[in-house]
Image (tube, one colour):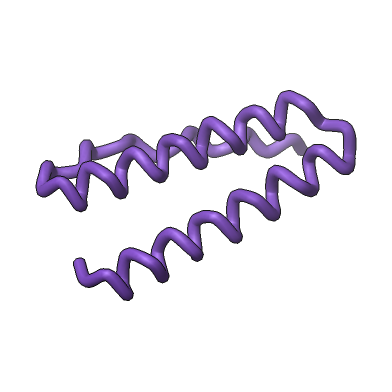
Length: 69
């Protein structure tokens, strides 16, 4: 991963997550904001593992929300 690719990925992650965190805080949704912060930390940790040359762990997809009829 080049320096430019790394910068672009960090910028993408930061913009996405900070937008979600800001929206949750403005709406008074503390638990959602905290979950978004945790997700940001998870994404940054995965990126750091890729940069360090360790294979990223395979993460199972989140269970889909059940549809209510």
